[in-house]
Image (cartoon, rainbow, N blue to C red; front, side, top):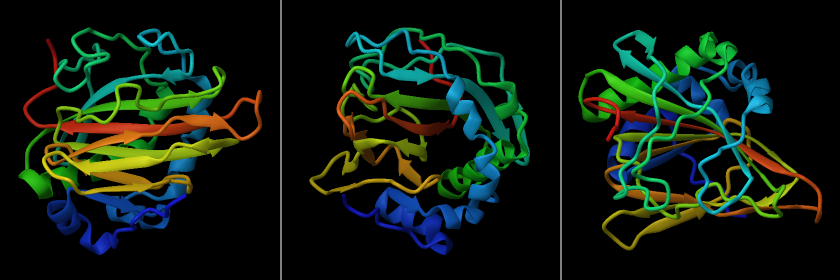
Length: 242
C-alpha cells in the first residue's frame, strides 16, 4: 500500500490551488477547526446505515444516508430533505435519476463536531473560489464485503459536478484494497495511495481532477469486512437537480 502524500496544513489552500488535491493527516484537522477526537463521537452513526436500493449492478454492498446543508459565513443550516441527483455526464451509472435516501441521523446533525467540520470546509472553499454560500451534500457510506467484493465507486473514475469534494476515512475493518486514485481531469498525471488512519481527509478540486476508489475484499475469505467513509460535496449557486 502506498502512503498518502501528506499536505502541510499551513499550506492547505495553497496546495489545493496548485495541485487540485490535498491529503490531511488526522492530527492536522485543526486546520478546519475540528479534531479527530471530536469526530470520533460520530462513529456509531455508521452502524445504522440503511442499504442503498439504487445500485444498478445488483450489489448489496453499499449502505448510506444523505443530508443537505447551506453554509453561509459562520452559519450552517440543515435544508429540507431532498433527492440526491447527478447528471449522466458525471455519473453514467446512477446519473439522471432522483435517489431518495434515508436522512442523516439526528445525533450526527446535532453534533458540534459536525457543525465545525462543515463550516471549516466551507471556509476552505471560499478561500479557493471566493466568499459565498456553499451548498453541501453529506453522504456517510459503508461499503462491505458481504458479496465477496465491495465497490466504493461502482461508476469508476469520475467528477461529481461540484466545486470541492471531501472524502474522510472513518474506519477500515478486516479488508484489503480500497486504494484511492486521483487523476488530472485533462492531463496524464495521477496518484494512488491508501488511506488507513481514521479521519484522514482527501480534498479535491472537482473542476480539475477525477477520482475513484478500488474495490475491497475481505482479509479472510467468507468473513465480513467494511470500509466506512464520509463524503461531503460543496457547490456554489445551488444543489444539483434535474
